[in-house]
Length: 144
Image (cartoon, rainbow, N blue to C red; front, side, top):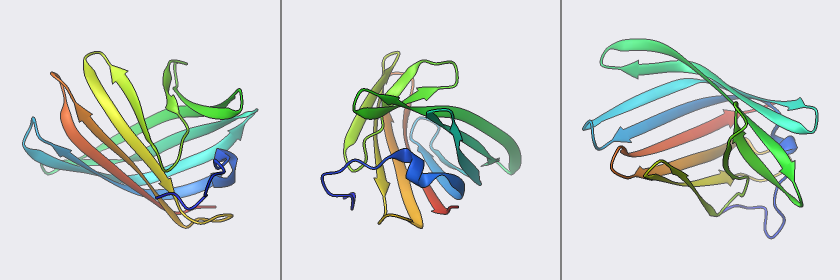
């Protein structure tokens, strides 16, 4: 459970460079992939830029991977959008969020540690549908 109580955390409190490790348990492929690297959360006007840079470890190969998203203010909350501007999900911690991608349903949860300076937090996605079937768990550590 999120330790923020009833108050939703402002993603700007998480600005900084975080180490991350990710596991992807792919039930379709019958394997487990891992990714490690850094996630940098930085101010981008009123938004927060989420930039991932890491290495995917797959079948004895090490492949570079990157991803950029944004967390932007909307009304009285925040929303995660892809780099191209398409909506992903509300920035809600300690509660499940969902995103329909084609016919595949992403059910996710962000859990952030104690503030004002959490030293670790997690993002988990359970993805199910006709095209995908996996669980992806990302642990972020360090920060600042």
